[in-house]
Image (cartoon, rainbow, N blue to C red; front, side):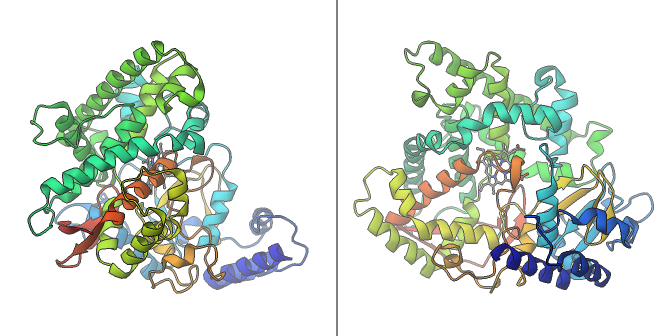
Length: 530
Ligand code: HEM
């Protein structure tokens, strides 16, 4: 009965959201009491096909201009949009054109189809087969498959890889990154890195407790140090004082900064690098080569350490060692480490800290929770402590909903599919703009209010569409680092908020897209010792 109600609720929402002609189809198709399938959309495609489905060309969207198509809109000076405005553009498209928007005429890439209907998003995700195709990072794809094919070969990793080779690679590496038991081993190492970060905060803050304007750099160094500890089994040394410009940690920091700041430009502006090696592209290649060098250096050191270990009991092994113990070819470990670093260097922490600093009441609730869990702040963190920090986790989840760190996810359709009543050809890139859908009143009750309690188990069963806000994506391709990302955020917040009060006394910051979606401007927080 419950599932029938859920189906009817879904049907009702769909009927409200899509085009009127689709309402007719949907109501006829779904409002029959004979529905037995668990997925409300499962049996729909053949029926829909026989009804009047609109052609792809009729989907509304900005009109491309001759030669430059729609890519000109992202060109500096003449364009009306900035790369960093992608979040805003996505909202504007929805307001101007509705629940399905086609952005065509992009140079060197297929159309982008923005879908703002959570039921339709659910349908696309649920219909994807065993090898979902996420159209990500064209630069990385080109680097892996063309520029350094000699290195990457037939199993080039998970990021920017598709089909059977993606599946095989992911199957070989995913167990240790997703097993809660394996993740637990990292609480102490991440805590140690975080303590060093807090010591650094103490050193760099002024007499008025305020941090310098480039504090985001420090947060990125902490994230880099965490990911180095996880993916390479090493302390990279990025949190050291007065690093010389030639030192390895500084070079790694510079390489990471370059990756964070330029990838969006390389990928979203007209990708001329596909035809001629632009200076930005050449730097990108040098940067990537440097990351490979670093990964090989530290993974080789881990191989030597593993050989000298007396025990091969899996529970004693680090993530890197577990992979090395299973794989005969160390390349799997090099490439996996590289993938984890490339997507793990950015972090949601800038956004989360900004939200905490500007929401003192919420911050106080988390502090009170932590006082209960950690009466003695010097005690080492355990899984049990983090399990109890329920409100803190709900806060993080609500930041993800309202200020979605990844503004959207996407899939390249592998079959012709009907979305919102239009026939979408195979090969089109569908974008699910979580930043917009997570803030839509029809999918999230009282969406405009920042309310962490909506994520607590005991909260009233408010309307919360499960596909409106998916920070880590969905299904077989879901974020591989999500357990580490959660762990890093929870450890940092538990350590910081137990002992410090965060404040922010400057102009409110707007959000923009660099790599992730984050506040744009100087993060001059005050960290006041409690
Ligand atoms: C708050 C931080 C993070 C967010 C919001 C995030 C979000 C995402 C999303 C939305 C995807 C695409 C999932 C899909 O296609 O359904 C993804 C993929 C991925 N993420 Fe994360 N991520 C975060 C942190 C990390 C970290 C720290 C790591 C590494 C330790 C990581 C490793 C990966 C990898 C390897 C993939 C590709 C998986 C595949 O294609 O098979 N992520 N992430």
